[in-house]
Every structure is written in structure tokens, then in C-alpha cells.
Image (cartoon, rainbow, N blue to C red; front, side, top):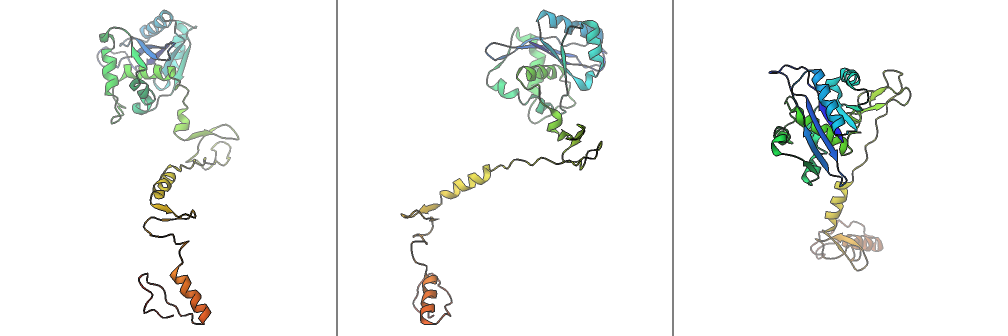
Length: 269
């Protein structure tokens, strides 16, 4: 049982975004269940009361919060409200499409459910339906959907994703500083050379080409492969050019021009 939380930067009743608060859990059938949507616009103190109340009411294990917006204030305020509430800060990616991508197949398979009256999740469903592959919705106010995605990613086992590795960052082998494997030539802290990882070769297209090319080949009784457009196997049937060159060598006349493929009559070595 987890609580996804997408904080708002302010608490103005008319202009501020909502604080996304969604309670979700994983069942014994490994399906994911949305249990409650507590999103609202409120002061930081009221938001902490709402989260702590839901945490104990649902006997939750973790509160998932977006680090970019929450910063360090959330940790301090939550601790002051209840020091026994466990939380986990995550770095949300800019593209909301990429955030929700791992959860989308689970929804299509019927493994994600919403429990309760339909009107309880009407706004949440509307925001989720707006997340399509054609729109990243970076500037959209999808606070409920963001909180829902954070909770589902954690329950689905996708919460341990290292976003720095996705963007090309790695750890220096010498001083453990962050380096960009594709941009940095050496570590900015210790000067250690940065070696970009060698991408694994994808032979899918080559194997596919070989498979299709095999359909245009024939095999003679001796096991030789040759193009299907030829009537006979070139390895089994004699080559006219090689035959005439051999004749020229035996007769001492080696000015054989070549075989046109039509007729040997009229050709003189």
C-alpha cells in the first residue's frame, strides 16, 4: 500500500494547482488497485494532515513524492507532523509520456483497477485519458494523474529506475563523481578519462535479411546453394569461360575473350 504525492508550489484557492494525493495498493493477485483520490488545494499543513491521515488509515508502507517540486521542505514538514511516516523521493522525468509508459501495458491487460464509486475518480480518469503518445503534457495540470503514476510505478516494480542512466550519466570509476558518458571526455573532478559504453549490436535486421534472402535461393542435390533465377547449379555445371580458358592453355592459344552466354558458335579462341 503506497500513497503517491505530487506537490503544488502554492496554496492559492483560485490560481494554484492541486496537490495530487492518490492511495493505491497491490493485491494478492498481483493486480494494482486505486483506492482513494484525496487531491485538493490546501496549505502545506493541511496537506501534511491529509497524507498522514491516509497513511495510517490505509496502513500504507510508503509515501512517494516528486523531488523536483517537494525539495527538502517536504521531508522536514512530514517529519514534524509524524516522524514514523516512511517516504521515498523520486526524480520525475520531464516527459509524462515516458513516466506513464510502463503502466500503460498493465492497464491494457486489465491488471489495474479503480475501487469505489465512479464519480470518486472522474477527474483522475479524465487526466489519465489525456495522456497520449502524441502529447507530453509537460505544462498541463495533471496533478492527480502524476500522483497516480508515481504510486503505480512503485507498486509495479518500476520505482527503482535510475533516470540519470537514461539520460547518459554514469559514475566515475576513480572518484565516483557524476559524468556524462557521451559528452564528457574526462571526469571534471579527478580528470579520469571517460569511456563510453559500447552499445550491443542488434543483428535483428541482418538476420531478417538473411532469412528473406534464403527464400530466393535453390539447393542442388550436392547441397550447393545458388540463386533461384539460375536454371542449374553453377558449381555442378561447367563454366564455359573456364572451359575455354582451359582449351586455350592446352592448345597454346590464350586469347579467349569471353563467353556471351548465348552460343559458342562463331567464337574463336
